[in-house]
Image (cartoon, rainbow, N blue to C red):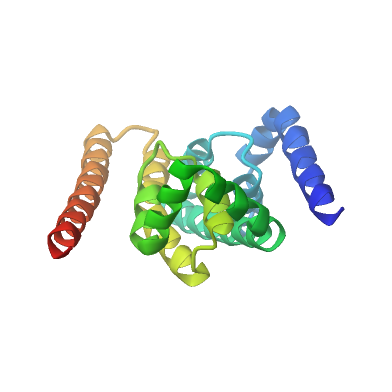
Length: 206
């Protein structure tokens, strides 16, 4: 009963927020205190009804790149911890049973559990990976909480900093925008290279 009610309430809030998403955007465009902005950013990370990159960019435009990055990084970290806790303590046993029943998912989960920190960092760095899915999967697979939270904080930082910076430069600074994109690409390349080296080393040790 408790699990069903939790799912019902969560889905209901997402539906309502989606219906009124344009009103939410209008409200976000108004001048609010950083604390209210943080609350809004955390709720929008917990209930993903619009692309979060849009939220980060909008905050960057309104509050400046640095403050927007601090607000959104803190808010998404809080939301990630909350979602992890909800899934782990309410749905983990059922989720683990399902993951174990699918051979491919079971192998994937075992690989993630062997290297949870590096796996979460990489998942956070990749812009194509849905961040809510990462939160849910980490809780379902029972990854170590502090390792998950630290990896999330590190992995989310480059992307949030990039979009906050771009939002703060919407008035036009093409040179700095190109430099920021190049730096982000370099971070992704370095992360991929590091993981490739680690995997190669592990294979050689076996």
